[in-house]
Amino acid sequence: MKKLLVDTNVLIYESFEDSEHHKEATNIIYGSGEIIIPNLVMHEYVWILTRLFKVEYNNIARKLEQLSNEQNISFLCEEPTDIAGALRMAYEDKIPQHDINDYIILALAMRTKSQLATYDNRLRSAAIRRGVGIIPL
Image (tube, rainbow, N blue to C red):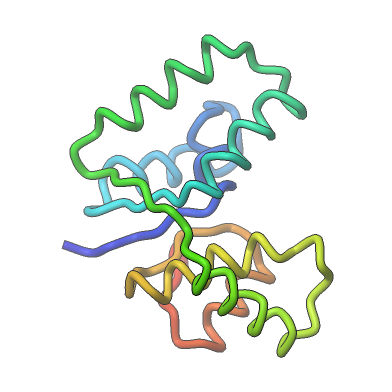
């Protein structure tokens, strides 16, 4: 069974049936084996749903409960070493400070030896440079 660590954009696309990657994102989350969702991704997901999409709290809570009840989904806390590794990679790649979350997600994929599921082209490139498998291809 393959192990996938998902980026926030995969959750967003899965959440909205009219999004361009909805079907693919749904297949990633519910049909791709072992799914890992970092705490950071959950925080970003809630922030985006509340601030950008104005989704009501109770609807978000239901979605989070749905995800937590899935047998193939686990949640992962970031450790200080993950963040330190992300900062080193971000320094090497000279990325803007506001993109550090992407590198924390990348560091977690590296630690868990997971493929990374993301639609973010910059993050995809950084993952490929470091030998991390990505989907969708």
